[in-house]
Length: 579
Image (cartoon, rainbow, N blue to C red):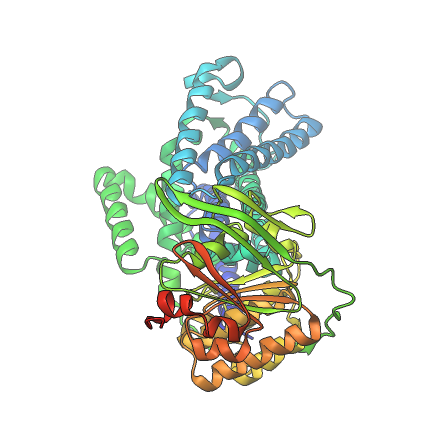
């Protein structure tokens, strides 16, 4: 069991304690507090919806009140004409949730399409709130305009019964979100939050995943709005505006984002205390909340709950098995053909008419001085950089213009020059995400079964990572992180493997072991491997073919003997004057 699993167990205990306290609170607090607690529970559901988007998925939504308002207005309008009708209430509840979810999903597809920055997402969602507020004010025949809406269906019960119904709704939402966040899908959400680039290069469609998360989050916010309308009996444009959006952001930030318990604590504490203190100290209370928010952001950026709980270790529950890789005859092998490839940034040309072929069953090394364009070449092949001219084809597919996840689906794997793993996740979780090969994971279950290729098993044992399956990746040494990333790429079982300085930070013994394993993969599986490497001795030991890249062009290409004896290579790369 990894550290995250331990934290989930701790959170479960605290969540159970909070629910028990909420269950007995109406019987020990003054009667007037029941109404305050009921509204606080609704706001806790709203906070949970934002926590899913912001805390778990890293989506900074500055307009979450829009979905809350859509739910409230949908319910109110649909039950306005048929007060007391059970059918209209049911339709109002369902439509409120669905419309809010659909709006969130649509907004998600728009803002995430170009893999936008957090700032862009924040600005767009903020603009959405302003737009929604103006729409509400401009169609008073439906929304009531500035006067709001009233006279729609309310619950046929009140007081304690109403309180426990809302509490039951909060518990259902908590269970629903717990299943999502502790599932394989939940791990993918966190992975994309922490390292979207690596997720794309493992084959995951991060845009689609984030849009799904945002749609679920918007639906839950709409559900909170649906509950708010019959409880309050009146809705106004303030429900859909910027003030409520920023308030829920403060609740989650203070309580603890990325923790269901934290979001609930933040929402409950502030919304229970606000009516009490705001009456006596209307101005000072808002200033106090602002100061608390600033202090938490500076000294406990993940919230009070994350700051207070302690991490603990435990034994692993992962089960590691070796699968039987497909032999070279069963694989659909073919070369990557690069023709007249050019990459430019404005007037600066990086690659200048590169022609190259990466063949299956061959271990090819690219050498060249810094700035020659070696990493840019791999970036062009794998979709990280868009080429200015030329073509890159693989098995009938044109790779230029394709996104990284689409290229990864073609079984083209890559390792980055700098280690690129999921720092906040365990070794086992890193491997698990790679093994899935970009397939959409289950939303309800967490799989601890790791079925890895024999080459990955050998690397795990040699590097000692098989003893550190539960270790958080950020706690590993640089060399261990290098091994982990290589294992992740190998777990994809690629037909073409692109490695950018895979031995950087490794000892000589480790470099030799990497070389042996790579040569074995080429010999037994027939895959093609392209390696960018500066260690000439290492290159001589493993390479079947060497390509020299200089000043954005192919300067030489041939066998190890041909390249090492080339006068041109000695001049431009080894720094030796050719005789």
